[in-house]
Image (tube, rainbow, N blue to C red; front, top):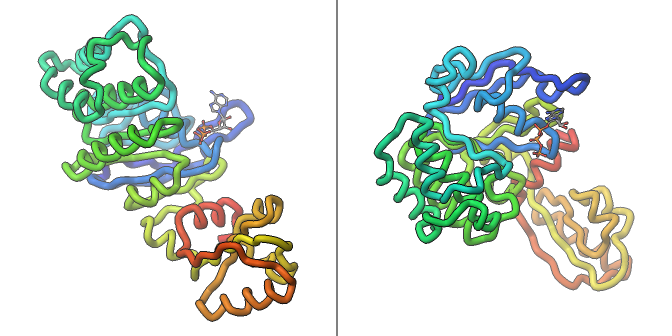
Length: 303
Ligand SMILES: Nc1ncnc2c1ncn2[C@@H]1O[C@H](COP(=O)(O)OP(=O)(O)OP(=O)(O)O)[C@@H](O)[C@H]1O
């Protein structure tokens, strides 16, 4: 049975179509990435999954439970880490987590609450009021809140936006452990390196539609060849090489260029062209294509 089954979900906000018929399914045990630029519809889709927002048409089920018709059963199986930090400022971290447990009907949940706090480095903040926590600490509590009822399906909406490296590592270690233990993870992030490292399968959304859905490795293989990154000490990129630039911004910024190469033998003619144009290379690297390159190509509609 699918952990998450989304069938033809549509959502409009007045004249704006936020979701234009999204269909995708996430299997149990997957670490799934939901990627897309700002405004693609990721948060709208997550709020429909969490039952906080209604789709105009289509359906969403969590482990077979429809999020509208069987709201309680679906919600019980789902943990959502929202993007926005909303808390009652007068409660401590432990009280906040106990209340969330109560919401799911769990009375003696302190053992698990302690374990979650320890794994998120929150133990020494257990008795601190929410209002006295830094933004990064509050985000840890949001993650802890989503996990108090040990949901089999965990959805994280940009959990690492604006958080420091230490929290990111703590968080990913814990989430990866939960995934190894069988929890299904659905993640949205703008950090494509993170998505590439963590997700086994990825859906890319663009203006409310799924424009790519495949395993992470298959997506990366869509980009043929490698890239030659050159940084010029002086001179401009000769016109003949401009069509090879994979990030158009680089033509504006200058100096550093990422050039598409299919084979190693493509490198020497590029260097010769640069030499003839009088450009001096300060630094150079040959790189394999990564998820960011795929993302840019797909969003530009080239592939
Ligand atoms: N409550 C709302 N009323 C009107 N329009 C909305 C509402 N919520 C979202 N939208 C619009 O729907 C579209 C999808 O927004 P959504 O927040 O789902 O995108 P997103 O992919 O999560 O973006 P981001 O990466 O910026 O978080 C956007 O154009 C947004 O402006």
